[in-house]
Length: 365
Ligand code: PLP
Image (cartoon, rainbow, N blue to C red; front, side, top):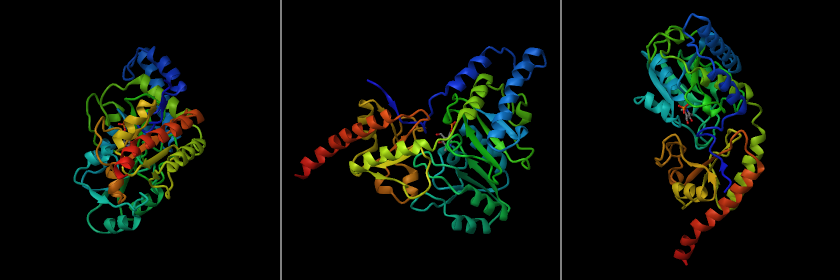
C-alpha cells in the first residue's frame, strides 16, 4: 500500500539538500571547539550554517544560538528573557511554551484563533514588565498571528516578545518583525531532528544559559554541537521555497472533507498554506486517525508532539470550540505533497466518514 504522509507539522520529510549537506559534514572529524585544522574545518561548516540561517531569518550570525530543537529554543527564551519579568502567553501556544512557563498569564484568542490584541494591551498596561510569548503559526490549526502588531505593543509597554516561529519558518516569509527572540526547529522545515536555534535581536545580550557545559555558543548553550545536523538544518532552510502552491492542494482536501460533513476550523483567519484542521461532528479524532491510517493516510489528532496521547485540544478549547475539541484531525501537507496525496486523502476521508457515520445512522433509524 502506498503511504500518503500528510503530517508535516509533526515532522517534515528530509529535503535532499539537507541529506547531501549532512553526508559531507559527517565526514568531518573535528570538534568545532578544537584549535587544530580538523577543528577549524568543522567550525567553518558550523559558522557558514549559522550565517546562512541568521540571514535567512532576518538576524545576525552572532545572535543565533544553536539548540537541540524548538522545545529547547522556547525553554531558553523563557528562561533567559523571562528573568525578573511576568510571563504572558497566547492561549493556543505549544506545550513547549506552556510547560516552560507554567505560571504564565494567558492572553485570550478569538473564535478564529487570533490573539486578542486589545486584551494583550490591557494586560501590558497593568503590572510589572512582561515577557510575551506568541507563536507565529499554530501547529494544530495553522492560524498566523499578527506578530508585528504584537511586537509594536510590547515595545510600547517595555515588554519583551518571544516568537515561536517553529511552524512558520520555511513556510512563510519570516523575519524578526520587532521581536526580541525567535525559536526555530530544523525538522519542521525539512532538516534533520535534534537541532534548532534561538535567534536573538541584537539588543538582547548576556543571556543566562539553560545548559552551561563547556561554554559553547558564546556561553549561551553548552554542549558539543551536532555538526551534521546543523549543516542539514541550514541546507534545508535555504532550500525552502514558496509554499503558497500547497494552498491549492490544501483547499482541495478541505473541499473533499466538507463534502462529507466536516467543518474547517479557523477558516476565517490567515493560515499556513499547508495546514487544515478538520472537525467531523460525532466522530472521535483518534478513531478517524486510525481509520485513515488503515487506508495508508498519515494524519494526526491534535498536537502530534504529544506522542500517542490523544487529549482534547487546548487550542480548540481556547477558540471556544470545546464540543469539537476531541473530533478534529490535522492534515498538514509536506513540502513534497502531490495531487495524488490529496486524491487519496479525499477518497479515504469519504470512506472513513461513511464508515463512522453508518452506526449512528442505523442507531437513529
Ligand atoms: N513549537 C511549536 C509551535 C511546535 O509545533 C513544536 C513541535 O511540534 C515545537 C515548538 C517543538 O519543536 P521541536 O520538535 O523541534 O522540539
